[in-house]
Amino acid sequence: MYHLVREQTLEWSEVVSFIGLYLFTVFPDKMAQQQGEKKKKESILDLSRFIDKSIRVKFQGGREVSGVLKGYDPLLNLVLDGATEYLRDPDDPFKITDDTRELGLTVCRGTSVVLICPSDNMEPIANPFLQQDG
Image (cartoon, rainbow, N blue to C red):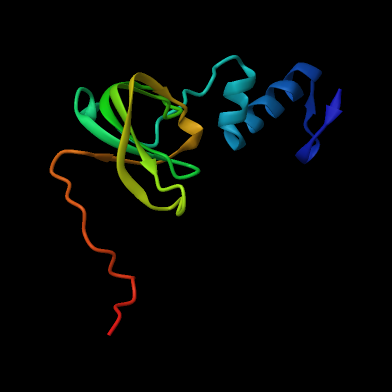
């Protein structure tokens, strides 16, 4: 027997129940995971509206690819159909050239995705942060 607040005498099973209830109210996510309920991973972005539409994807390291989004998962892994890679200038790795390379059906790893944008209704603009000579 164990003594708790106000000199109440409790059996061991009551103590365990009390501690379990306390932990469940204070740490509900942790307790649910320990009881076998896995927390479902939720996607940061809702890409369902871009399914079967053309998108452009930028990756870490500077690569850019465009294609038709066929599928994705919560980790942002993407499946692009008819993918085209935009090649970079060998002298300036931050500059994209007009040269392209056809990739076809491609799976893009979500951990390297930096930016996703729709290709339709998108037009390039001049960089407002560049210094004008003059």
